[in-house]
Length: 95
Image (cartoon, rainbow, N blue to C red; front, side, top):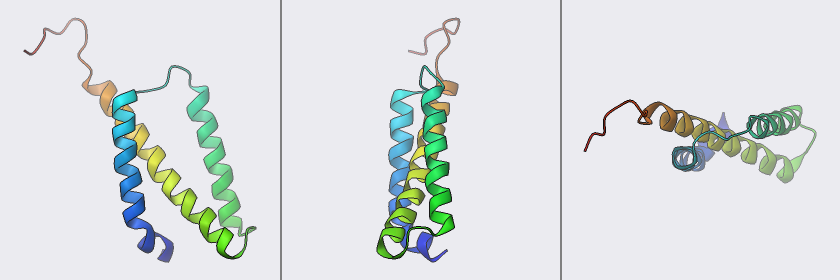
């Protein structure tokens, strides 16, 4: 909890950046890419939770995992928002 208390500005910035990236790019064409990112993030989180990496390097790993999770969550939310706000072909233009 102390780690999140110190890293909330970076996590918030990563979330906002992820929202922007996901909003601009949308969902990926192939589901293998988000699946691989999810597996890699889970592996890094397991490594951080297990405490295998000690000292300063462990702190950097835990910090990177916290910010990576925030960024990926923002990307997913931004892409879903883009998908739900998309104008469908049968809708008349709004302008």
